[in-house]
Length: 128
Image 1 (spheres, rainbow, N blue to C red):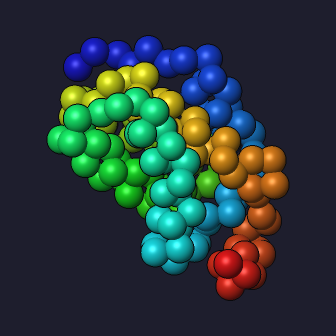
Image 2: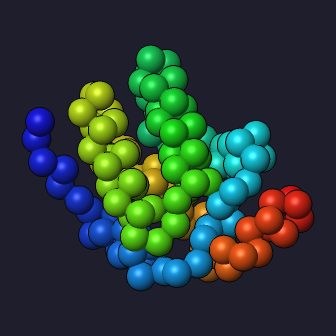
Image 3: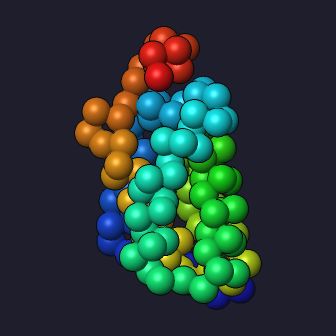
């Protein structure tokens, strides 16, 4: 497998999570609500890319796995899992630039007020 050439924006996104002690707003959110929150930024990137149906569906599966990662991980573990997820889906045949653009767009859509204290994650889940 080829090494993943990371965009500077992707590196900054990973670094933000490596140094952040708080969880994203998606942390511990129910799967259906988390997926709804991710659909808008995901579809924006996919529609702008003009992908064929087969690749479009593959990206939707990638988005579901990305949602699960954002709902279950935080901090350094989240950064590690995002990088691992990017490498995995590039290995499955998705474009490296597209995978990184999706992760960047989704993570940026929850910034800057996209973080909650881990102890308040339960409150965040019920607030949505």
